[in-house]
Amino acid sequence: MLCLNLFFFFFFFFFYRPSNLFLLVLKCLKIVRLELLMTVVMKLSLCNRLMKKSKRTHAPKREDGDDIISKLPDHILLLILSLLPTTEEVIRTRILSTRWRHLWTSIPSLDIDYSRRHKPPKTFKKNKFKKFVFWVLANRSFDLDSFRLCCSNYYSMSTIAQWINIAITRNVKQLELRFCPRKKSEDIELPHSLVTCGSLEILRLFLSTHRLSMPGFIGFPALRVLELNNVELFHNDFLQDFLINCPLLEDLSLINCLLDKLIFLVINCPKLKNLRIDNRNKAEYLNRFEYVGLCSLVMLFCPKLVSLEFGGHIADKFFFQSLDSLKKAVIHSEDTLLDEFTFDPIGDTIRELYAGISHVESLSISHHFVQALHLPVSLPNLKTLEITIDALIMDSIIEFLKCLPDLESLHLIVEQRFFTSRFGDLDQEDRRRILTCHLKKIEFLEFDGENTKLEVAAFLLAHGDAMEEMVFSWSNEAKYDALSMESLKKVSNFHKASSNVKVITLLRTDAARFSDNM
Image 1 (cartoon, one colour):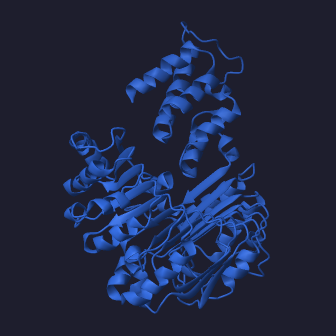
Image 2 (cartoon, one colour; image 1 turned 180 degrees about the vertical axis):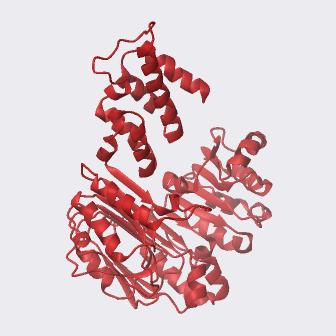
Image 3 (cartoon, helix red, strand yellow; image 1 turned 90 degrees about the horizontal axis):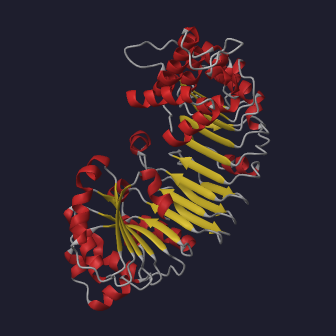
């Protein structure tokens, strides 16, 4: 920290191009933390004022008395402020100089979260936070690109509606709301100004399993992205009517939404490209409501859909039509439900899913998906597969891999109970059918240096004649730092059937895992 601050100090006073200096700082050193930013700027400002008073000053004195920081162009200062993570931190920069006092009002984004003021042993001051939100919104001098508000159940719906209305008057483009009513049984009705907002392009709602209703819904004419989290959908026509009035919608996500009150869920979007419905995090849901079967039927009519993700058990039956553009599918069932309920009806559901996605180029599935299929199957376009290898159903997985002669990239999640001998028992013909001339890349996901996974890697390297790349993606940073070089050394000693194969080890986050590889 000290060396970095000294670098700023000397660089600043030896060169008279502050714009270039800050661009260099932002692009090369990537300062994003408030503590460092404030330390640097305050030191520079203080040193500049001291040098003005010094008889041996090396910098020309400003005629207007302002410090050098105040002379930076607006776009540089706004760029600095935009790198700060919260609105509270942005506002605190007012103390740096007179030039910064009102600059924060021009920042195009606001992020206000009650939890940052509600940390024990401090007592959350509701009225103070309420006044702060009104003050921040009232002092806006430009339109809003994004507004994020998290206030839990501390405020009435009328107060929240007022905050939303002010944001809409600023032509907000991206809105994220995390709140819920004080009463558990109370429905949430969004203000009319929101559902008719012509500037809104992205809407994310987190409603703590409350019902959502719309007042005389007309539609979001510019909405491209809609994400509903923990929302109870209780009326069959609600979502369908909602989507019909969003003509430009391209991305739809339903995360941990309660669907059990629905007989059918219809998604009819002519321009929808990405659809995600994920109910995997349902432990609390199962405890509260008991399992009564989720939505009975899901119907998709999305001719431009490119990516489809289903997590958990969403419906008993599926009907897909006009999904010719679909390229990528992620299908992961809920393990706990498979353990608790008979497999036959769930298997029927998975087979219906398979029939609708059999033409995809990218597929991510669990071993339960494979177990439910009637092999052999046909996936004529599949190029990339992510799959979990489990010892108990290894025969099914091997038979499934034999059905993919044109597979180019295979991403494996190897369960701890996997037995390498199940691969070793394959005859030469089975090995040839699995490790085809098209299979160029194999990646081990969630790798932490386990010997079992290294044994699988050794087998694949020994028989993959056409393999060009083997990747070990670590999920634990501490283990990666401690063990990655040792594991790489072990792999370097394995016999390799392909002389061109490259072995790569890297640290990969969960968020980037599937999107980067598929």
